[in-house]
Image 1 (cartoon, one colour):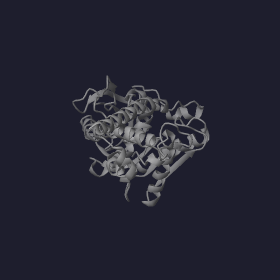
Image 2 (image 1 turned 90 degrees about the horizontal axis):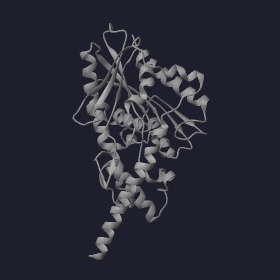
Image 3 (image 1 turned 180 degrees about the horizontal axis):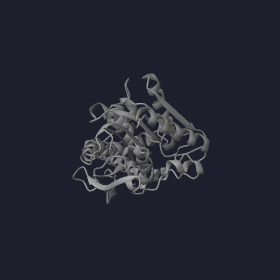
Length: 332
């Protein structure tokens, strides 16, 4: 009895330690709100003006307090159809807001797309309890929001016939989950996905930045804790040890959903990222190659989570994003 109680207590502690790590470490993901400083980058950062079109804010898509989206409608409302560009905010799944991407969304709108920023219920922990949010529930909220976004655009006279989904950090992770897991059931074809520094999978050995690659009890408990918090379901230490946790993590592991016919992809990762596991991005690259996807992968060798030390490659990544937008989301 005492031994069983001790084991249960140990598991509970490891889970809550994981939640603490999740809240603190991934909360630092808000730093991935890329601060674009070079003069060339102003092209991709546009201040909103009514001359660009019409902006509608805080449109509801569900019953939750965070279930709201902003819609950016281009000036030209005469076309028969439009591409939708969704950009999901960063913040480590625990913070951030769609309003923080106003300049990116304005740039997309200026290019002629209907653009949308979508909020999702953030993970919160207070007084030893969570609000029930997880990466899984957030991905489901995004999935449920997309039809509402398309419906709202059509109501305003902007019928959508294709879409791109993108984001930064946590938003990038959610964008990839939608693009690879949910695209088959999307209301319109997902023509393109792009983003930066989003965690794409949950192989314990890749998460060496948290020490989860080590063969120690502490490492197993840490992985069980943080993966449980991200999934919103208990992952036991035994499941970590025997590898069965990977099947449980599949719903939020974007790499696991990549198959032939997945959307064209442009991504960027910093080799010195200490927030999300860089090694996981190599699995993403390999999966895209193996399935014959049209993709571009940018490794910034001197940068961390903010892609801050490789301006030439950063510029090349943004230029490639625009190139793929023009190719797969052609404005006619």
